[in-house]
Amino acid sequence: MITIPFVGLLFFLAMKAKFLFQKYSIVLYIVFFLLSVAGFYWIELPVFTFMKQGYLGLALFYVVMLVGALPRKQPTNQPNPVRRDYSILGFLAITPHAIYYLQKAMTGEISQPIFGIIAYLIMIPLFVISFRWIRRLMNETVWKKIQKAAYISYLLLFIHLIINSDGVNRIAYVVLFGFYFLLKTRWIMKLFQK
Image 1: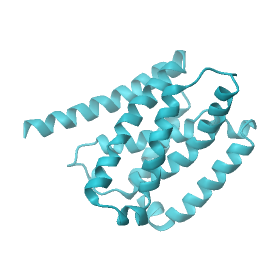
Image 2: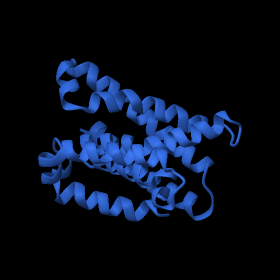
Image 3: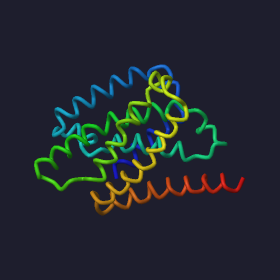
């Protein structure tokens, strides 16, 4: 349930504070990298619960999904550096969660979160090619094809969340992802109508 306030705040920033990302993206990358490292080493501390449970990473990825699902006529879906930056920050924020639970699965403390593991593995190349300087080295068509793997990652992430949550959290994830799938489906249908 804590994911929803994160999503609201981050969506607001994505729409209203793009200048933060245009001027300070490198600073944000460094801060989130350091936060990710600290979260990895001290994940059991209550202050890192939002990283241990994956709330911050999920919220960042959800805003990336949401902005990408908005119709192209919306000014929010113009070439938006926030999507790139949020996906980079989301990966950094979700990494302590992924490593923590992968270690628990490998020691037999929990069952293998297979959908989460595969979603995370798909995110690795997407993370790497999200950086501007790497994208410039790539063929545009190849870059776009690799980026389509994000949709597989989103679906696996949804399945992972449904399997590994309960009660109110499960309902919140169904609502969040249902809204995304509805937006995306309407957008796709409009493309076919043209």
